[in-house]
Image (cartoon, rainbow, N blue to C red; front, side, top):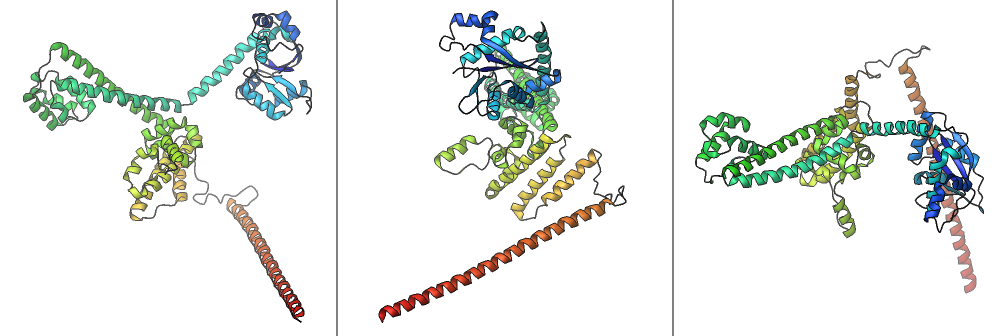
Length: 521
């Protein structure tokens, strides 16, 4: 397919070129053709500058390039194309070569009779645009030497600065990476502790029955070392390792005296101690990472964290891809988020769809009876959707709404269990809003009769509000009367119609009876 015009998005403005000589589409990959693109004399005969629409400044250029990268056709670009391209008709179409595929779709939507080709769809367009990027400084006569390079440098710095700044502000990315790392650390820590119990179990097998915590087990192994050296003098140090539990420390000392484990050589004990050190450090890192995740959730999504917890909230954000995506999901999607395999399997086999996904790991579902788990999961998904939207779009981070939503879920669980009526949603959210306003130092304008402030024309705000309410009420009454009147008129018309139909039916019956009598006679 031939290309008539080319759009070049240079850092100094939009340039429209006309393709004077159509390149060979069959031999476009030949070495001679590729060299011809790199030769300014030969390439200059192929294209011809139609018009240049320069940008007004760096800020204007940055805004236009951002639109181009997002596939948005700005008004400036639209005006440039309308000015420099001939009007295409139904019989004759014009083909425009564009570098950005998404931008080509926007141009096609604005100009239906204009065909667009990109570097992905046409090798000829790719070669021509490559030649324009290489020789644009010489083909555009209005430019001075070095203008293109200076513009590229300044615009590139501004564009990259905006992208990096945007990535820094996107703090939910740290939550996604933290929860993924935490899951991997949990798996590794579980494997390490299992291996440590196997290794040290040959020397002190009774210790595994006394301690259930993996972190405590690794610390105690580091503290004991060789069990034969353990004595009553070490009780205080052992108790400090096991959370000041002296009974556990005494049980460890007693078991060490009567242990059935065999002795380990110095080389084996050194390996076990090194492995215990790695396991203990990994457990400490896991605790540090969990604390970091909790602090990040309190900064980025405090309401979601207060409602459903740090871990489950972080998993929801990670599964959605970002907090913005999670806030856009409806409650029905949040409810089954994480159970996609079960959902598609149920749809394929026409079975029952899952009731919950990741929210099943919250404490609310576990505290609910079996009959009410589905209803609580729907209610909880609804509140999670509200909390994520508040976190995403609010300027001041606060957990007041999340705490209020959590109380609502608790009340709903109590309602299903005992029948106690829950609080009204409007009252709960209004109380949370008042608490937030108090924290940030904004008073409620409708509280304490402060709405009776006299305005400039001597009318109070309360009187104005009453007048507005009265006007709305009058309009509503008029609308109700009008609808009632139209309804009555429709009923009268239908009644009259039914009477006419009845009379017509009776007349038809009388005529048919007379005909029957005549035929008999």
